[in-house]
Length: 356
Ligand code: NAD
Ligand code: IPM
Ligand code: MN
Image (cartoon, rainbow, N blue to C red; front, top):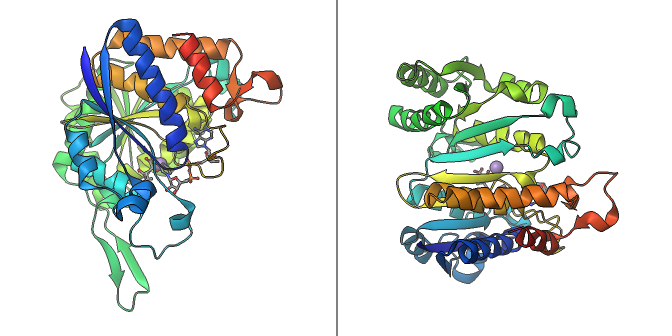
């Protein structure tokens, strides 16, 4: 198969981890007889530096013309520490999600058995945990009207959802539940927020079309607690943009590290595949970032956008073998990991390639 992929590496460790992701794509093409061609595009701080715009028009055009996007990360401490900056790297990521209509963000929480000891949660509560989050990605407080009132001392971000937005993400989540353990948990704050009451109403309506799926509704505060108390009780979780952002960083600790969490952002056109982590400036340039979230994002791309199930499985299997052999990046190592098995970004990538 011929596929054209746009690599948008972005900022910080985005560059380091997508380099490995692309190497894995090349190896898959070679092994399975595909032809992958690539283009690169700018976003975030890198794009601001080059063009003044965190999301140049060219990036959107190239993305729309591609079969899939491999995305790194955006963000820079310069803006994190300057609340007054009007032009910000994150606008690039939010903008591309909106421009491509990527309303569903799938974030699988899959714990590799070998990483049971990497998590700070006790292994007996973790073994077998397998959750698929559906985070709504183009609505909510992220995209509602925002601004300042009066003398500038009052600010607001409108939390807003429309029926169709909730319905389409709920349908995706229910469809997925039907292929899994047929359990779905919808997370909201319907005891307080009107937008959550609409969310719950729509999810209840959609549920009627899926009588086989066991549905529960949890409030975000309780869901955050249950996720740590008993992660195995969850199968598919569907939630809004903000709650999904926060819950999945929390859930990354079930899988051992932010460096293990991949995601697929999909809508009606080109899919975008990205780790859930950010640009991680505390480790940028040190060559220690875990590239496996990017490699797992490649696996999601192969399966979801290209329908290459065997290829995706080969990637996940290669990671499994590398972990079984004892290799770790720093974030998934523990006190008992021998120093010679703790690898940097590039060396971890090489190990994965060697198993492919
Ligand atoms: P972060 O995800 O960048 O980092 C959080 C912590 O996790 C850091 O200690 C970091 O070192 C560690 N970490 C993250 N990815 C890792 C990996 N692959 N391997 C090893 N360790 C890893 O979050 P932050 O520090 O809150 O944000 C930094 C910048 O990234 C901010 O500007 C933020 O806006 C941006 N951000 C971007 C995205 C994205 O592009 N999707 C996501 C989150 C944050
Ligand atoms: C993520 C990030 C982004 C989000 C930021 C950088 C805009 O945290 O992809 O999870 O909040 O969606
Ligand atoms: Mn996030």
